[in-house]
Image (cartoon, rainbow, N blue to C red; front, side):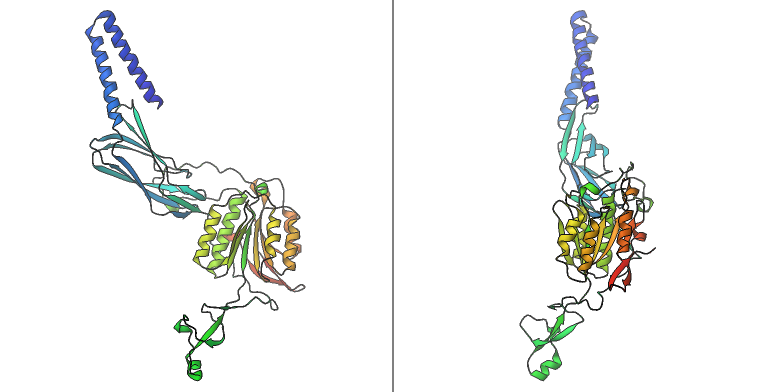
Length: 436
């Protein structure tokens, strides 16, 4: 823009100089200079006026859901539907996606022609990002006059948290003998049959018990009982005041020549990012084991996802965590207190927090009294650049028989997150302890 203004100013000065010189001296070469300069200005202005006529841009991403650390490809297609060639076209990707590629300079795009290229984006941060807008700039051959057009974003990319495989995370233990879970009949087919009843319209044929039908001379259907499995709740501390971290070191990448296996992206050195990634990895691992998993986050408007199974629950949890922000005001233990009252006896809780407050112990004792079994994933705040220490809190939790898995900045979550069964015989309460 500045160069275009400087060029136009220089030509205007040259035009004035030619006119003034011809008026003073009457020399013909001053007049020729004035004519040439005027023609250059008028011709450039005319060409720039129609430079973007018929020009359109289409952006198409192969995937609209990906995780941090992956590389996605996006196709840019430029179409010239006009009657004039486009001498040059600058395509500038103005997406808020960090390290977004796709900005190029296309030259000599003929009429009724199209040009396409592929851009690669390295995903560094979770969130929802529009793939755009895109700024198109063109003009005359000399760049004296520029035309701009802003193409709005047509698609959005959801970047999920970084996920880790958890090979050391064993299946959640079942409740202890003497702890009975609520049982109820269900319309789903399960391995547990509770009895027979008369067939009702709408029952599937596979539920008919043919020997009983022959005996009673009427259609009889089997009743099933819902499987009794331990429910797992993941609680995530999103209070703004206790989060800490370091700014990410700058990373430059032009989106060319790198393969996905050659790129290594580490988690940002931030307690919230480690907590979100741990929660996402734990949820995926447990849901793969067919455990009902719920999620609770202490954000400004607390997020509560009821326990469920299946791929849909995985998607719901990952989408929620992808957009999670540390904007909570209430202490984490307040959420634990409030939700602990509504959890069924024998449930398991995974509490992910960087807290160092001793008041957190009161919430833990309340859970133990309700026969709720917590595993605390405690983020070492000092390793993330914080000033306070939560080592005393970790020691106090272990003294109460609560499993504590301490995570430090730089740890591989796939190796440090462990859940092993053990029992405190003196109190009959299960304690999950992290492996060494």
